[in-house]
Image 1: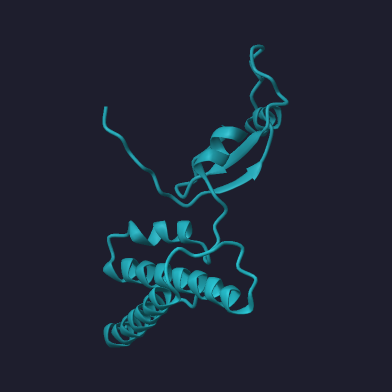
Image 2: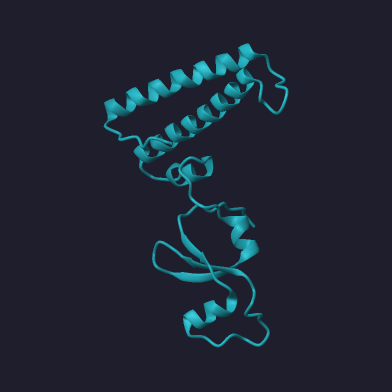
Length: 150
């Protein structure tokens, strides 16, 4: 068999198996536990299903535009402008993470001892800054509206 990775935006809310069966108007089978924790899942086409808590939480993360995982939706788009936005958002998220680490290093609150020299990190943050500036210039030239990552 081939392996697949799925990326999709869904809506979900916690709902046990018994409440899901009531919601659907079904009688719960005798061999199923109505107290099983899980989620009511609604897909973009309106299809709804129930997922056990463990499987749901292994597969999904709450959408947060400040987290790298949330950029995967844009990365899979057929529209190059959406992929461009993902590239920009990923870079800004990574930049902010490195900048936060360097700020902690500067004020003595870093929780680990870096293995690379500070000059290496300085080169990296400069390269990331330059890359951000290039992407922002391209966005203006190409008419791409960038969402500001908080």
